[in-house]
Image (cartoon, helix red, strand yellow):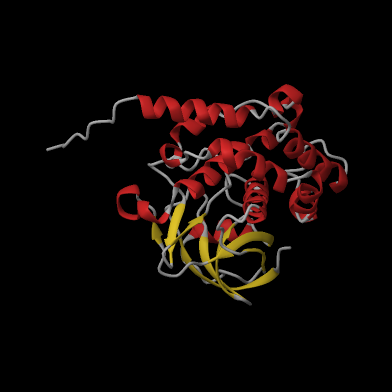
Length: 275
């Protein structure tokens, strides 16, 4: 499901992101690579892969994903010590996505017509399901490329996997209150209608395929494995969480509907001009 590529040349850091991703030349063109040696660690890369694969299963637009091997020689001539340290800590497997040359950040006032109510509803549903807090007006993580929106940067999602021991059945199925800040919530007028279709697409078999695509190197990384004794145990835990979260009634959908109603009922915020 995910191609594996070799990193050939470090080209440019993208300093907008806290994890210092970079544009890297691979054996299959340019990719934006996120590094396992960054502060968020390998769990952030697992979230990036899982959410990207789930989005793809739902026919949502995400750049092509790739596993990118960073060799020891990459970046040795880099002058910035921060980048050299990051690459040294990231030798081996990392995660990349196809570089969208010429893409620009989504802004509701400039590209709102490119996302209709149907697509907005599906994106809000996805982000509520995977507990993704990073799709806000301040930080939408939506790129516009070839007059289409593309979903990027899902490393903050699935925060349950940072503390599996505290995630029981009740916590698995909790709502996601931060959906109230979603940049597309006001446009998501078909949430109820798309709910059943989205959940049906992600049956246990499909979710098992997605989880099976997660590489053992990341799942068994000392900073990610936790108390898991084997890769099979780790994959089973992710699959169980994602499957149980889809059981009806889906509290994350109900919370999104409440949040949308509250937003529509509140008066629009006044713009302040600073001098």
